[in-house]
Length: 301
Image (cartoon, rainbow, N blue to C red; front, top):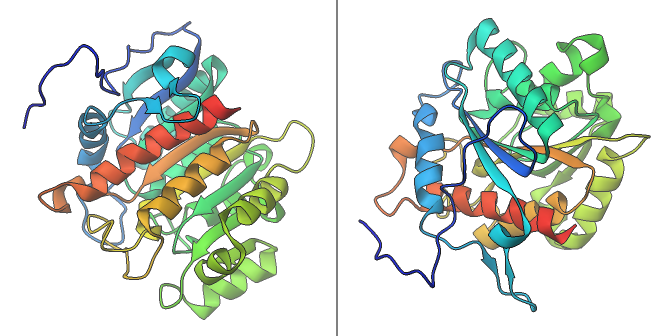
């Protein structure tokens, strides 16, 4: 469906292309990982779908005062990494994110499955990690279920993330194993379960998470937004989403609140399978709104 053109209602998205040497506030990059997914997925189709969904929204915050994000931020789009899976693709993704992180204050990576978190966080030089996810992602091997473990154990020594600077928000009942819960505890990862978030409130959780992940001099935080942390009614296009997860507004508020911290230098949106979404594309639209929430957080700084 084509929306009517209205000069007084500019759409979000369709940002200028990034060219080497450009400076920006935020740069988008598609990282369509999918080949090592533990469940069948068409997540490689998602970056293009998110870009299309962005055009359904404006870039305006109601405030007060009203803020046009396109007027206060320079947002560029660096296209996609052509084939991010495998060793060659991993190296290409790390290098591309490193280039973009030097050019802008925030790199926003559009996945793809959760395997993208490993190269994106490395490329951005992350020293701390916050995940919004129903799952630990601490599995052995190489898959969309292992990026957190890989950042701790597999990355080159100078690029590893100290598990004491990892915070996992939204870890859910019936979505994990006792063995991986024990691994997180043994490593000193701060786990804030879905139930704890709801007991404490979003602002309190955001404050703790950014304090832990942002500890130390010259801290650089990567935010991993696994959309399957959302309730399955809001995110049916996520293979592993479950009933009872975060409401869409909770996920969006967490994303904005965390990204408002100036130590957040990169973020990814993961685990949306655009080919498995509903006819109204509610999951892809939620992912697109998370992109806009990231930009809103950046503007709030």
